[in-house]
Image 1 (cartoon, rainbow, N blue to C red):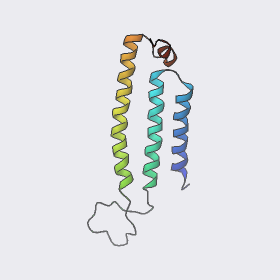
Image 2 (image 1 turned 120 degrees about the vertical axis):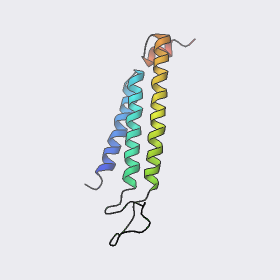
Image 3 (image 1 turned 180 degrees about the horizontal axis):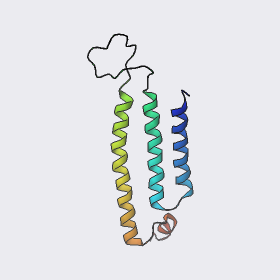
Image 4 (image 1 turned 90 degrees about the vertical axis):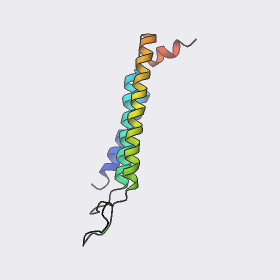
Amino acid sequence: MGNMPFVVSMILVMVGFLTLITRRNLIKLAIGISIIEMGVNLFLVSLGYVKGGIAPIYTYAPPGAKEMVFPTPQALTLTAIVIGLATTALMLAFAVVIYRHRGTLDAEKIRELRG
């Protein structure tokens, strides 16, 4: 059970890649990229987990505390969440603009309309 978060993060990344490969709708492509981001964030948080560890915000560790949790993966994950939110908003905004101008969200039809 100790490797379960790593397995789940791999499954999320694979589902996201499968979505990118098999779907043509721009909204579904944005969802696939978001699923990949969730898998990477879960992987980062899993890397920083220490069983029985305490939060590194204390000046003095309580008695009996063996190890502190490494804070860098959590900081990277928070940064990745903010960047992922901005990226998803930008992708959806592009999808809205493309739909207004082209009348479709199908990536194949949008490629055919190059001129």
